[in-house]
Image 1: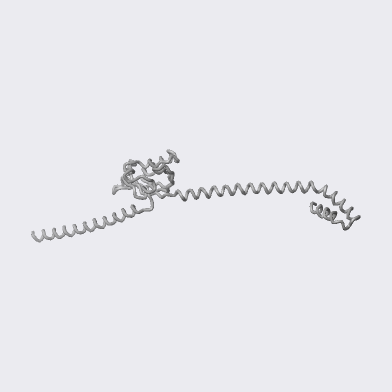
Image 2: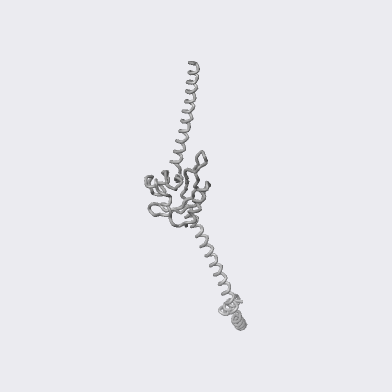
Length: 219
């Protein structure tokens, strides 16, 4: 009986050691995950299934201007800018409540009123029974990239507009030259004829020579 008791005690001690080892390993993993989220260059928001914010990381605070205390208990709609319509947000909600991941671009408003753009992924968090318990959003501020893209598009449009104007101007110039050239041909012929007669009488006259050479260039 004593031997059996000792064996059970030894087994219990061993299993307790194994459990503590697993707990310590799990704790280390959670600490690493927490550090990764806290130091992430992307904003991270976790809400419950009602959409109430339960966690935001430091990057969220930096980008939005809302402190941790101000954000907790709020709904992400505090960032709503009004640029995107109700159907847009309905699509987001419908997607994540079906247990799927939504990816897209948000136009949001900071606490100070500034509009900014975010590339976002929102996914459901499920428990061991595959039941959705929370939602996590990971968002990257792409305002600078979007503004640069818009500026490039505007520049391209201006270039195309300028090219069209230059083409039209060149066409008008060619047309005008054709008209001028055509209208000058007849009078130029008369002038050349008179100059030739004048040169027969005064072959060394520089003025008559100049008139004839100028008139020749118009034909």
